[in-house]
Length: 429
Image (tube, rainbow, N blue to C red; front, top):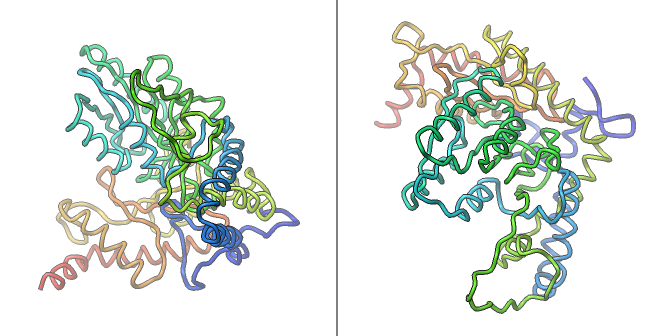
């Protein structure tokens, strides 16, 4: 395994000293909520204290400068202009902001993969109820090849056009959530450009996870989280290529009581929300400093996280006697997340689980991980099989995956014997 370098903290358990974990807790799910190092925590507390010293001075005069500095830092990290970056509370807020800002007409269609993040799909359902928008879905059951994903995507656009509809927006991930696999999003953006479809990229698992090069790929809209793989505070940055709102003709200009600036309309729209704790946004530079000086830079971080994820996943599969979710070209695991099949089968035979009980089993597994073992790696059900998702991170070592595998092996045996159903009956009584 690679380390953070001679002058940095070595990757693995030594890196835990920079974080705030309970010594007995085993975090194998950085991809959901992430965490941040102590140096970023200290910066956050400093900003919160600074805010309360002179609230009006801070929000009216100091905060815009701090946010501009943070936007410039993250823009350089993403490879785009600072004028294209703004902060929102999370990636789903960014997706909502984009979709609810578009005007949809009869015949407009938004299309997405079946692996879309649940809250984003809820937004689409809302828009279908309140606007003329229609939706279409591309069904995916992993593992699949990248070429198949691209082909199905292109075919869906053709199908919609042949039906006389307008494929207006396509929403897709950089790395999907469940299952956690790398999506060929760069190729999908290119197809959108060719077909004149707006690309809305859910890059929740993006910043700090993949080498994004947004300035080269140029999606129409991109939103990402800073906490999942970036060791930042929980915040997000959406970027919008070439977006600029226009004032409505004849509309009275609303007086802005804040100091005038030279920022674009787009930036100003997100610059000030008085009730929002902006502290997380202003920790960007401290987090980037941690990644440079303590970890040794982006390439070392990404290489270690991908390597430990892949090697750990393979070790888990060996212990469970199953397999890693992968395709023939090995692209699904070209990221910091690995999915391993669990030794639980769907059926009505001995030690099998009824399909109608699949989600009850997932909930039971998750609960037991937390209650009995003080570790977490999310179980899920996909394509007729049970899986577990592991997130590789700089504070993990192979023996962490081994420990989780042994726990999962025991829990799967218990679930196969019906223990999950016995607990449900006990709770109902």
